[in-house]
Length: 375
Image (cartoon, rainbow, N blue to C red):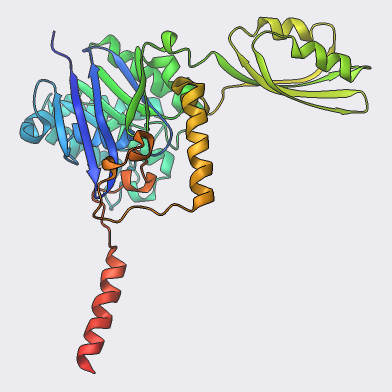
């Protein structure tokens, strides 16, 4: 069976900046595929190439068996897309906007599609009678989700889809994703929230600096096996208690503060949390917090300790030497250091085109030139 999305050696350059470097991904039909990574990792750039918003510098992309550059409107009707930065303006009401999308989607009867859209609006709790420009960010995001889901597309491409949604609506959205998968639809979603991916995705790819640093099913990547813990316990011997926690398997980076018989401990647990909980049993626990680490930390762990150490050394060296950025005309990939070649300005990813000289700079230069001409 042909993969729904096939990306092979995808490379995207903005001037001297490399946003994607030899990226390869394959998304199987009827699955939920999660694309995660910190800001600037290349998630949005990747998804935009799939819907032909931007075009790759090199490499091949096939969506539903077709090249997005040649698929045209017929291919786009088979896709439901929510961009990372959703802009809904104008005086049209939500009803009118969805009616328009129902007509242009073309995959189902427009009346049936619109009926589905209204059902989704009820589930998400958005008032479609109001002009979309008056809606809050969260409600605009709901309208964006409705227009993507309502025509039951073969492929859903969702870029940071829960941005601006409250926790209850996020839960409903995750249920919508599961229902889409159960109906045979394929879902490709990007996020920097680990819990979203863990709850819905069948397979995951982790991006950093335009590269896939790990991929596979969620369990194999063990993204949820790292936790931060903070605890306050009552103790009469802080030093002995601290020494006892030093021996807990998987607990590292311990920071301890003692004040008036209250010991505050914080650290990171990798693997099973049970030994830590058992170590707390003899004490009066006044407060306990267990949370996921941020995604950047998880990505660094996937790189491996050696890669993280090398990156840290390079960063310190650049700060000491004050290394300058390359000229606009120089090619970044000619540098000897492979980690330097893929550094990406996060702002570049969000622009449709990157320019070395901004519009404001051009206007200023032209104004100065015209002034000299008049003198």
